[in-house]
Each structure stands twice: as structure tokens, then as C-alpha cells.
Length: 402
Image (cartoon, rainbow, N blue to C red; front, top):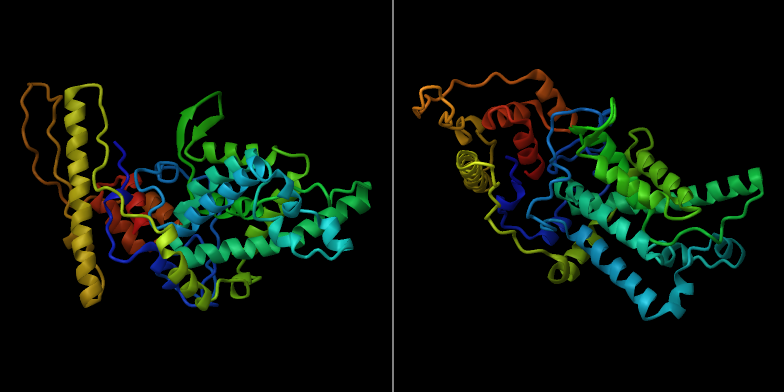
């Protein structure tokens, strides 16, 4: 049984305040390989992930946490979508002000179109697909912090303008096709840019086989949504390529773009003061759904696992509060004792006997390497795997949410 750990985690600070308390300016690039509390002058190298296995469905399993601790994602979901519906249904005559027209920018110096034409989607299909992708990509905001996440979106949004101009001019000079007036509008380039950390930091977990080497993974749905958005228009491929290129440039260690394009601290504080009552989400309910097994024994087993995980999270919350007051490192061994042994319901003589507590588990180095590829330290990876009885899915969920 897989249980979302985000629904049970409680923190005293509001999500918008986290936007203002993220790491200092010029010291945080959007790197999918460090925990949220890390501060570095340069992003770490991007691992060639995306093809690993065994990390569970931690990305597509959104659980019951919704948009908790994701105010920037919530803003991007509500505001552009509402304006897109308003322009399509109520104010269609105002859509001309939101057309992404590079020819007008070049000939008539309508620089404002670089902003208005790249925020609101005029096609409702693009609005729907981009909203679904932003909702799924909100896990990056939870992991790295709102300011770091917003800095990545801002940097990719600015860089993609340069990519759009270069691609449009290259196609015009090479093939004589003018596309400057036909580019799709909307906040699309940063959405495509988020596929870069998604590919690099989220392992691929096989769910089912289809035919031969073809299989369904935990990332298949996200890629299908991206493909749907990629094929929704004739020239959207220009925006997609420039978005992917901007995401790669922002994550590059050599270019150090995150030191130039970032959300300044004064803007983060201003957003925390003005947007907190609008886009902060309440804490999710501590109750999680219990899986419905095929038999009573399976359902009882699922409930026992759920109680174990809830106990583990409550212990973590208590020790975390103590650490915030006293400082220091968390003693993982004291915090997470090995999970109790389950009753063997299929024992051949029909008896149910409680098994003695097992000694500390030997952790697979392969599993540790997968967690370290995602940016966690070796010590945290080892202790999280031991605490979860070598359940890589539970360990990854826990480390991502904390």
C-alpha cells in the first residue's frame, strides 16, 4: 500500500512566508539535486537520471496535500486560467492585446507584447494542458522553496524570449517561412523548461508492460500531457524548444544563469506580504485514505501499515520542533525504530504469532545511490531506508516532503 506522507506533515510557518525566507539572492539556482535547506553559490551537477527504477510513484501520486506549501503554483493555476476563460467567454474583443506577435515587437517596438503575450493562453486547450502540468510540477516548489522555484520560472521565461527570436529568424532565413505573428500565447515556455528537472531528478519506475520493451511508468502520463501540449498548434514547437533550452541553460553549472536571473529578496518579501491571504493553502487533513484490499486480511494489513506511517510522521514532527528550538542534527536511529513485524496470516498451521523485532536491516547500495542521485545525503538516505524497512517508495516520499 502506498500512502502519501505529505498529508500528515505539519509545519508552523505558512507557505507564503517560506517564499520570503528562501535562500539569499545570488546564492540559489534552481537545482533539482539539493534539499530545500541547502545554500550554494553554484548548482550541483545534474545527474543523468530519468531512467532509474525503484523510487515509487512519488511524483504522480499527489495524495491529499493538494496545493499546500505551493503558493506560486497555485497562483499560476488560478490567475492565468481565470483570465484565459474571461478573454475567451466574456471579452473576446480584448484578445488582440494578448497576442504573442514578435513581428510587431520588431517592427513597431511593441515591447509590452513580450509580457502580455507570454502570460495568458488564448487557446483553452493550452490552458488546460499547461495547468495540469503545473499542478504536477508543484512538487519542485515544495522541495526547493517558493523563491527558488519562482526564480527558475522567471529565468526560463526570460531566456526563452531570446530562443524564440533566434528560432524564428533561423526558420525565416533557412526556409522563407514567417512565423513571428503565429506563435502561441501563454505561460508555456517555463512549463516546458520544467521537464528538464523532471527528467533529471525524478526516477522512472515501471508500472506495467505493454509490448516487448514498451512499458508504462510513473512518468508516462506527464510526458503524454507534454506531447499533447507540444502538438496543440502549428508553431508551438518553437516555444517548446526554446523553453527546454532555457531550462537546460538555467541548470547549467558553467553558465551560472541563476546568479543573474533570480527573484530578489525585496520582491520575495513584498509577495509574502501581499499574496499571503490570497494564495496560501490550509494544512491538509491528517486523515489519509485506507486502501481497500480484496480480503479482510489485506485490509487489516493495510491499516496496520497506515498506522505505522502515521506514528513515524508524528514522531518526526515532534523531534523537528525540538530541533528548531534547540538546534542540531536529528538522531534518525532514535527517531525511527524499525517497524514492527506483521502477523503472518498465511502461516501453514493457521496460527498467528507475533514475530520478534528484526535487527537493523542491510540497505542496498543501489537504493542508496538512487536516493543520492536525487540530491539527498548518504546519511539521510541510509537512515530513511532503514526506518522504512527498505521500502524505497516510502523513503523517497518522506525525503521529498521534508
